[in-house]
Length: 366
Image (tube, rainbow, N blue to C red):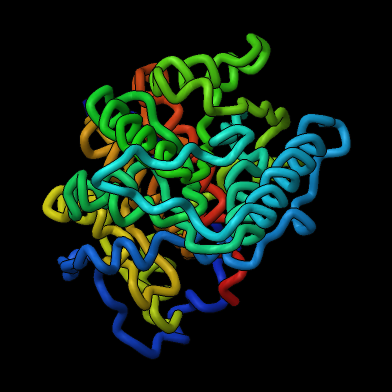
């Protein structure tokens, strides 16, 4: 059923770049793009996203009221030091004998915590502090890589790495979880070190290691190789900040798209339909050379498949730090209460957090 939410009053605080008199260009449309991404690019792009390209343990700002955040930095610094002190790269696979045993110490660290506590920042900091070869990707990107290369080729390609960082490990698809668990088992056998993150639902934060227990159960034989590391705290994107900013008017969105160099302009509903015809592994390439995303007519998403595609697009936009100028409903209302109570709640809450942050960034387009 279509949402009966009233259309919010458009913001009067529109960026100067959206003033009608400043129109100078014709914006591009994401719906015109159907990129083809070769497998080689998927491998080459297994690095931290631009938002985290320059982070380090030193740039992480722990919440002074959360000792677990300070502990996380210390543990990961020690993990990185052990990798730096190790010998060369990971042992090479032999087809005629069993692989050499993995170096001593845990094969992996699992960062367990809620939204916006800096898990991705810490994961990227570990990647930057570790010598190569190494790889960094989300759980979805890793499954896409296996699909593009095939399982055996993916094992062979990643077995030469010292470290594999997996952001946003997902436990809601049993098939993908078994696939990745099997892949990680093969990599651990070949001496590859692992670090993964996932999210704990907000109402589960007081119940001990809820997400860690799920994670370790799902990866079964690998659980003994992981050290769960709890990170408490509130979403840094909302510390002392307002909720979703009020949306712009349709006219302001169109004017902003015409004024901002490299901006895209799409009708929200039309873009959602287009996403169904593009594989999620290509959403990042669809945003190549885009510097801002302008969306008209944002509405509450009505079905789960569409909502999950929007989650992936939100992740790719957030990775690239693309400000979003939008009209329609605020982004904290884009998923229904029914969806937020369902099995994909963690994904939807993460997407809301990120879309709200990008919507706030639109105020910088002056």
